[in-house]
Image (cartoon, rainbow, N blue to C red; front, top):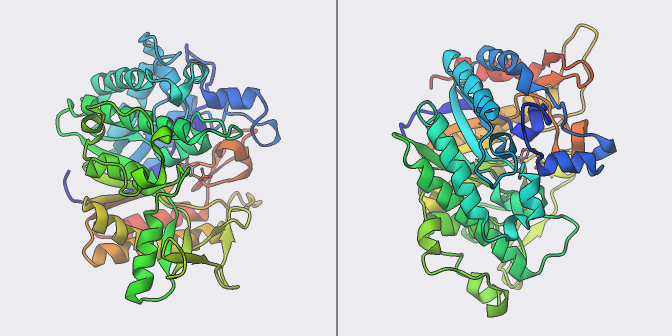
Length: 445
Ligand code: BGP
């Protein structure tokens, strides 16, 4: 991987493509969530931003924005409609070929997320992540991607946010109370999917692969050594029955073992069946750590707590986004970059960062999203601070280019640099679009 710094934007198939029933695509779990009224106010992704039909317009927006890279995901059921029977949908391949070619002509480097949560519904019906065959199905899907796109695409993220996949957004059932054994089995199967995917992608010449982790940062209350250690510990905490752990996925993949406390936290009966060679398959060290971050927690050392730290409330000046749930903590991004660098010692790419806002298109056809502008301004400065201090950080991607289907929140949470009118599908550039354009223009790298 060359060490230039790349400015980018990210998206995901289920959130922007629409075309849910077009050209032989199979159903994904997110199509099913729409059908079964599980999304805010009965919304669905049937049309979403209609990028399946408007990808040229969207690539033109990315070009105007000036990003050097675009991270998008492939819809597994668009490529293999039921996910598992190895029957490839040529129209699906054609769509991504067109998108990739359009990006390359525009001078934009494609970053492909192989899986961003739209599990084929037929696989979900067959037990999803609990089915031991899933990693073989995923391996075949990955092979199809490598063989069809690997001549032109060199950057891949096999799984977006494994924590969220198992945490309820990528094919597990948020209302189901899985036993620890089931939870760990799903984690293990997902790790095998990652490993087998990388083995397929490594067949591509000059490929760059990133793990796609996510999580809240941990900010030390003071600069003291104790608080810094406390924040580091909290950031990598495993936690029993908790899929929202950086270490649970990062350690097996990068260090070749489950986190140190894994075998202490769980009894033998709770552990998954781990095959003799599984860890060799899983331990596929990536070329970079891709990390998605939105918010952070405040942490202080506390010897009286079993974990050695406690979480604190933010003060009254803290501003929150996401309906009051996500504190705006740019320094959290700075610290997590330092922590990831210390623990895993690999190049880092911030593969998602951004904020939803409440905003209106004004009569003069503008969107004045000042909150997002200031949010991005502060978070980007935090990234650049870590970079100036010598951390090997290779890129930053805004989530997202367009307002889109924000999973269970539907169209109620708008994250885009470009506003989408979901009735007319008209795109309107927001102030943050011009802000980011200017950041890209004015930095020397
Ligand atoms: C990431 C997802 C994105 C996007 C974003 C917004 O977790 O990878 O697909 O949806 O977050 O916030 P949320 O955390 O609510 O999904």
